[in-house]
Length: 76
Image 1 (cartoon, rainbow, N blue to C red):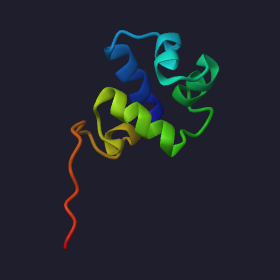
Image 2: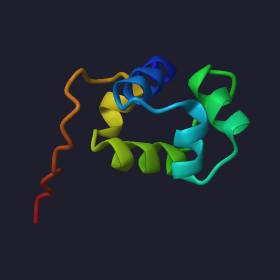
Image 3: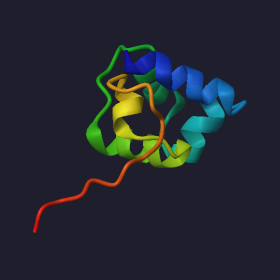
């Protein structure tokens, strides 16, 4: 579940919910609700958080255990 990853990433960065919410430009209550799974995480916010931590959206969503951001190659 992505909300556990949100908390783990935040704690690994030694940030409080208030500090992270400020860095993301949102209210602490809004961020807390995402982290606790009380509100769905909008895609734009997920992208912002993934970029902040330098992890992939798949990692953030719990789809992958690999935090590295991969470049998707498209066929021409």
